[in-house]
Length: 227
Image (cartoon, rainbow, N blue to C red):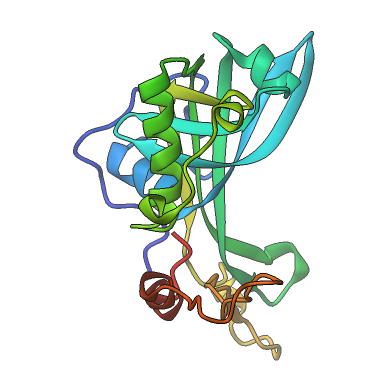
């Protein structure tokens, strides 16, 4: 099993900040590789430096082309401070525990992407509405038009930030244990795969009995995909 991505045809620039130093064969700067991981993970962590101190916050994100978006409360000090700030955004997905014959060689199979850029506040009303629509449609295609329209106050209470991806790195491990030279040692070794999927829906309390789960959501659950 190959423990690396195939070469990408179009890469982000390799810089001292984004260059993969540890196990470089697992890394890539390919746009398609980075985008695939961003698109597969619904959750990211955004890193800021505010008043000289580092902070990392988890949030939902979505991508459109070379831009990554995230949102939060307009009252958030992180989002207020992030305008025009260089930030990093990271996604990671665990695909399995790797059990070797020694504790030293235990590992995990994973996919991760780290992107760098400058956070910008989306303040144009039409662009902001489009971005929030994309957040819902990205996760639950077709749902936006069935929802109660957002109120002016709800829109005002929500901040949307976007970042053009200037630099990016993806890193992947997708291999069996690396201690093949100890294959004759009498202990089980291998991979315990980790699969993330949607579970059966849980209806909200007080839901009228005549409102059924939309077929689109039923199909989404049946597919098992989380994004």
